[in-house]
Length: 149
Ligand SMILES: Cc1cc2nc3c(=O)[nH]c(=O)nc-3n(C[C@H](O)[C@H](O)[C@H](O)COP(=O)(O)O)c2cc1C
Image 1: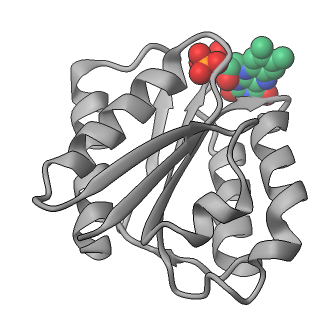
Image 2: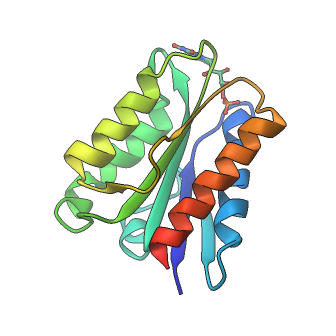
Image 3: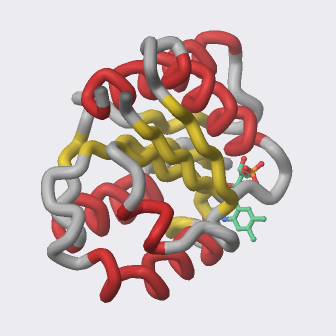
């Protein structure tokens, strides 16, 4: 029985559409429970209680959106050394298709928190997600839930 947590921030809905697709894909794995939380409402306890976590946000000012950064800023000391090897995926929406925010997310998840990447390639989507982009997000959610099972 895997518990998948999707934490995301979205200003205008593009990342939210991706988050919903990731959650849907995770739900395809039998026995998976999926919980979705906004970054400003999520807590370290949510992550500690999950078997696998997806993080998503837009690129703002060439970095991850402040709300997502705030989540890491306020939960890092509670999570450090307690989430090593927990599977994660990341998804980012951008205006210009440059992976600066995705790189930053992956760095915090991988190098700082030592989470384990659950899919070879995380999702970087430009603007309103196309049906193909949403399929990629669903696949990402499924891959994550398979690691949580
Ligand atoms: C304040 C602000 C700063 C932004 N800075 C960047 C940026 O540096 N690079 C980029 O590619 N897109 C940038 N964008 C565009 C957003 O990443 C893009 O519109 C994205 O689709 C928003 O996702 P959302 O609908 O989930 O909020 C910025 C948007 C805002 C509002």
